[in-house]
Amino acid sequence: MSSALTDLFPLPIVQAPMAGGVSVPQLAAAVSEAGGLGFLAAGYKTADGMYQEIKQLRGLTGRPFGVNLFMPQPEYADPAAVDVYAHQLAGEASWYETELGDRDSGRDDGYDAKLAVLLDNPVPVVSFHFGVPNGEVLEALRRAGTFTLVTATTPDEALAVERAGADAVIAQGVEAGGHQGTHRDIPETDGAGLGLLSLVGQIRETVRIPVVAAGGLMRGSQIAAVLAAGAGAAQLGTAFLATPESGATEIHKQALTNPLFVRTELTRAFSGRPARGLVNRFMREHGPYAPAAYPEVHHLTSPLRKAAAKAKDAQGMALWAGQGHRMARPLPAGQLVEVLAAELADATTALSGHRSAGGDLR
Image (cartoon, rainbow, N blue to C red; front, top):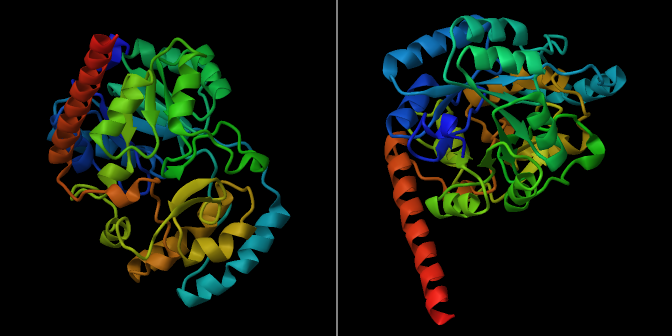
């Protein structure tokens, strides 16, 4: 792993940036203080909202941390398809006694304003989701002293990340909770993503930049597996979602291990882009009909999701979670980092023992 990154945090454990109010400063600070790399999620926030969270985080820890940005999205949604879906959601709006959101609330997520803040007030690490920033942006961040990462879900995307000049690539396997960070949203490829170990191996043979592995990781032994496959660090999201410091709702945290929610699926139901969550009523009823229209569908369903959360109705919420959700542990975030590090050390020792035994047998 690039020393420029590993010098920032002693343990190969990165807390994934989870947008929507989950990755709050308290969570990022606890992870960084424990020796991992904590992350803030700037997605769905204003530039000032992001800046205020950075200030708050800096007041909680002097350790390095990261900030994640969503890339602006091209306009390719079919307005007629969005109209049909809005009509289908009318019953949900009536049930929750709210209105559908404004589909035209913006598609760039305040990207330029957030970049300006991060260049004026540099942070140690910045990562990007839903595409690759241009080389000028990455070089400007590098000159500011910021280490850059970009998500990729295929070897070709990883190659685009390397060519753009990013310092490292986040290999996101199909097991990951929340939104898949595909660079282009192609409905024909829904559900065709690569599993994490296969993805890490292929990316390691495609690019020379360091790889951070993400997708369904919940235990130190799994971190050991991706490190053995060639990753330099592991990024975990769902594992930290259940911690007390997480900003997730209690009903979301409890749903991770609730026997009512037995599996996850990739769905467009809540945002118009493929995202993995716990299968609930909303996903079952609307997922098959949701168009490829991000962020239009995200804006449409925003009031519905907020109303469902207020009503404590898990069947109407976007319960983002990775495939390992049943392994969630509601430990304090700092303690969870310590447990993961101990499990990683045990797994690494066991692997070394097996190698030694193999050598003796030969």
